[in-house]
Structure formats: structure tokens, C-alpha cells
Length: 525
Picture (cartoon, rainbow, N blue to C red):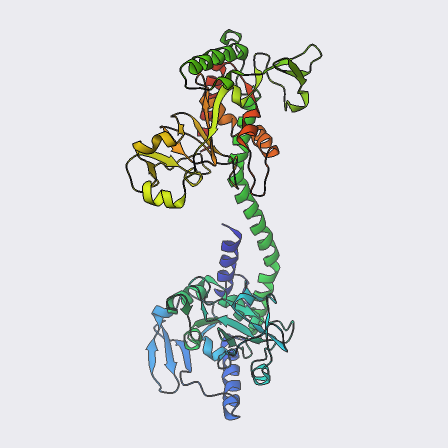
């Protein structure tokens, strides 16, 4: 149960007489209702209000059923089906119309940015209270007099979305104000306005509003007649005060509970992500699986990669420049060096953490063919590549944040246009390197595709794609990637991507690492 649900439950208990004990010595609510009727009769006689033609009296018959007698006509009808719940002995049911002055609609005149009095609107009603934010004003002297709010007045939101129509708040006299036409003034007579406010914010009242609202094209509406017809469970005055005080006393714990609940929800959402990141970080530091000497070394793997690259160069599938690799090693002085041709550079500060002895540090470009795709103009996309038969074309939007790719997106490259596009082969990795999702959208392919220029393809040599795929999702890589971001929209050039360091285990250890990662990830689902 979240904070809102708990609050709703407490409010519901309150209006059902379950929150505070009843005192048999208190005068019954019927006495309070009779006082209200007497007061309204006086106001009618003095011409201050109009007589309510629908005034009624609700009572329980000898047969234990509830009846409503309409005073103007004398008509009596059974209303058992309308009674939503049982109330304690000494409480009474009545229509809201009995407890308030005739409802009043707010001003329909146009408000101004500044003026004499603020005009409260729908947005100023928040969680049963009036919030003086984003105010507009009225300079109309007639409206400012007729619609001036009094302490304890209730404002009912008669027009709004289906979820928000019926919002109610109490005016506490913070400053003089009037109200707009989308609000209805409900001014209580003798009844505790705090009690009436909490009642109108209960699930019971909200359900009633949902039942009686009329649905328009864009907004819903509840007129004054409909809200006035709401059945109200009425305690005596002493108990209404006790109920209000009880709700106030537990309001702060409810708020605190709500805050803790939201934090717990956030933690539950974030914890699997945090654990995933931790697993990946442990994996790329050689801490997830043990090292086995018989599996060889990463240095031997680099030699295999070199041999594979030479083969691809001879076949014309790779440029000769791809053979220009550097060698990273640890010197006798325990520092890290990179041999590039005849130059030997100290790169100790670039190494983020220690790795097992049989691992090596290398550049991404040394172990994978890395390149970006091709852009397509909107005109070309519509005229040549929409709803046609061909190879799938993957853009940034087609890679989601859950490492999935939407292949059938309506865009494809027909065979005659394929020579104009770069191909990302099956089992290679696509990663966004430009914009808000740079470094965050990563997925591994299950088929050959053409792809966009904001995506980078990592096509690893010698079957090390899965390990690289998980490395590209690790906290260490993300940090290195972000360090290389430039530009207003944020992106990393392909040259910079190629130079990012990767800790490389032997091929068999990579396979064990990948298997362990996927096992642990499965347990997190």
C-alpha cells in the first residue's frame, strides 16, 4: 500500500465512524441537522438565500430501510440502494445541499496578470488545499465583492479531466481572493468545514463524482445540482472535530510513509540496474570467474587476431592501415607503456584498474572493425526506402534502452542500393555515439543490417563479440566514453571511440565470463 492508498483508507475509515470512538453522551447528529434547518429557514425568511425546492429529510424506517422525504411535496421513497455504507448510531445521512449555502459559480470575466484580487483557478486546488501559485487577478469591483472567499469556504472543481474533475480544497484565509468560473463555492452552515473537506476528498466522494460527471469532447463536468445531491454521513459536532484532529495527527506519518514508499519503489527499480553494473564491472576486472592457466593468455589471443586481420587485408575485406597496432605492456618499473612504431609512451594514467596477469590492455580498434553507418534524408527515405523489400535499415530510434533492436521498422534498403551503404554483420554490436542516447543505446545484431550514421558498428575479430558487448555496457567504458564527449548535443567521434581502452582476457575465459554474466542476469529478472 502506497502513501496515497493509505491516506485514502484513513479518510474512508473517518467518514464511516471507524477512526475515533463514539461517545454515547454526545448529542446526536440529528440535533445539528435541525439547527442547520432552522438557520436556513431564517436566511430564507430574511431573503438572504432562496428556498431549496429539493430539501429532504432522510430517516430509517421500522423495517430498517432508509427513506427520503421531500418536504415540498411530501413524497417518500426508499433509498437503500444509494446508501454506500453503514454509519454509527447517532450519525445521520443528508444531502450536501442541506449543509451549505446555495452553491455559487465563480467569475466568468477575463483575468489579468496583475490586479486587485487573485482569482483562484483549477490549478490552485492541490490535495485538498489552496496553493497560491501561478496567480491571475481581477479588477472587477462587483465580482471582487460578490465572490470574496471566507475562511472555511470549499472550492469544488466542476470542470476538468476525468481524473481531476471534482477536486475540492478548503480556503484558509491566507489572503483575500475570489474564484474562477470552473470552480463552485460550497460554503458550510454550522457543519465543520474541515470535516466536509476531507469527506469530499475521500474515495467515496471521488467515486460519486465519477458516476455523475458528464463527459465532453476534452473535459468532464459536474454541475452544482449534482454535487449538491451527494449523500453525506454526518457525525455530531464534537466527533467531527475529533475526526479532523485525528486525521491531522496521522497526516505527517502518512506523508513520511509515502516518502519512504516512493524511495523503496525507486530502490526496487534501481537495484537490479545497480547489481547489473556491479556484475559487469567485476567481470571486466577479472573478478567474476577464476583464471585458468591452461586457457592461455590474452597476448596469444592478440596474435590470433593479428593473423585474422592479415588474412582479411589480403582478401580485400580490411584496409592495410588496420594492421598498425600498438602494444601495451607493463615495464619493470610497474608502469604501463604503449609501443607505437618506434615511440614508447607512458600511459599509466590511462589505465583505470589492475587486471589479472594473463590479461592485456589494448585499444578497441585493435580487436574490432569499427565504423559508422550512412544517413538517409527524409525525402530519400519516403521515396526510395519506405515499405520496400530489402535489407533492414536500423536508425538510432530502432535501438532501445533495453538492448533490443526493432528490425521491421518500415525502412529497408533494396538490393540495387546496397553498395551505397555500410553493412553491420550478424553478431556485431551497434551503439549510438551521438545525442542524448550516446553510449546508452547498445544492442547485438542477430542478422546483417544497414544502419544510420549516428550508430557505430563494432565487428569483433576472432569471435569475441559477446565479451565486448558486455564491456560496452560496463561502468568503466561508460566513464571513458563520456570523457571523450564533445559538442552541444554530446557525441564521441569514431576516432575517439577506436582509441578507448579495453581489458582483454583469453578467449576461453571470455566465454566463461559471458556465461556467468548471463546466468546472473537471468536471476535478476
